[in-house]
Length: 217
Ligand code: E4P
Image (cartoon, rainbow, N blue to C red):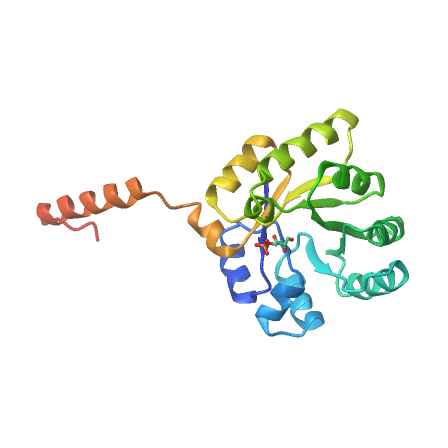
């Protein structure tokens, strides 16, 4: 399973990339706001840092303007994936932009039928939002499983990019279900390495080691 980092924070991406944890990056207008950076400038920096797909989102709502914005974003670097919302206009933009050879990430997916039409429109990635479904007492992971089944039934090549990941359990469950990619905030990716028994065990080993009075170096 590929790991994308869901942030526009360049130092945070760089830290994870050093460890080989970053197969790609996803951004959205809210994350650009949080970064306080200019979208074109920060996206260019991220693309130079990470060779994998970097999603940058259009903000127009009608297909012709989405396509124009998508072309502008795609001109930043060859590894841009243009992000479009899962609306009818977004699907029209998806079809045109993928036809021009650009990667397209269709975002804000909340149902299996939406994922089905995105695949039909040739999406490179579909982004079902797990956490936001959980927020309204639906099961986001069920949606990932449904899309996996549907895509496998018909051999759709669209990659399932599980988004709105809020916990380490979301990551392991997505891996179990067979999502192609998860995109998670840096804090969640770092938390994947944590376990209380690791901390407890290490603490005991260090205490016992101190009692030996030995040194390795
Ligand atoms: C996906 O690409 C989105 O940027 C993101 O995962 C949304 O997550 P949120 O629901 O935590 O804002």
